Image (cartoon, helix red, strand yellow):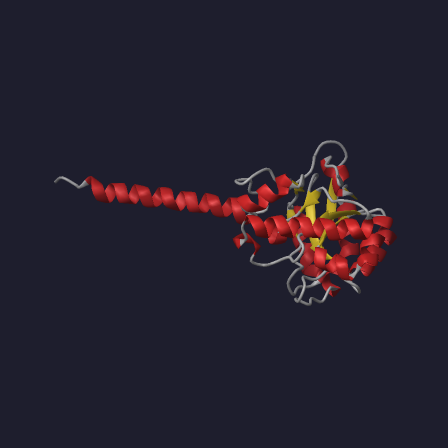
Amino acid sequence: MIHSPLPIALIGTGIAATAISAYTAYGTFVPRGQLWGPVVWKGSSDGPGRVALTFDDGPTAGATDRVLDLLAELNVKAAFFLIGRNVEREPDLARRIVADGHLVGNHTYDHSRWSALGRKKFWDEQIEKADTAIERAVGLRAALFRPPIGHKTRYTMAAARKTHHAVVTWSIRGWDGVATTSRRIVDHVLPRCGPGAIIVLHDGTEPGRPRDPLATLDAIKPLVEGIRQRGLEAVRLDELTGLQPYT
């Protein structure tokens, strides 16, 4: 019996298309995916065991200030990826982050949930406007950039390269951007902690999307204590990665 090569060719083409789609999705939506360009998703695991705490979506009054109080009590320095629109609303909080010895980075101007659909003009504006807002508030121009939800495309990476930003995502997320509890946050993060881990939590709220920060606030102290019990220490992101935080 002779089989036509056409169905076999179509099957092969379908498999190839599926593989390409999966690879593209991984590079776009998975924080460590590097299809479109280099991404820093973890730090060095050499030397003393260290991890970095990072916070997204601030500054937000009633949340960021309480996170800063807790970090001061625990003697921990962290990185805060700031939304430009929030910085314009709360410049004093942005200044306090830097005054307390923490690092600030760029998290776009609006934090659009549809940012993966944005093209060149969108990304150029989002990064540049956030840089400008941060620099006006704290007198420093951020060299580190984290895309919203960790999603990135060729346009994201091109805009980051153009403005001389290193793109930083994460190794472990606390899943505290949605309704949760402090116990769930700690139970999810701690077992995954190892040397070099970059942990992402949320101190702020996206514009127009209110969020109760209580679960995050209640998780910080047991999380830091648990990290230390594992023989690790939380250090600032630039210390963990060797990246320059400002230009």
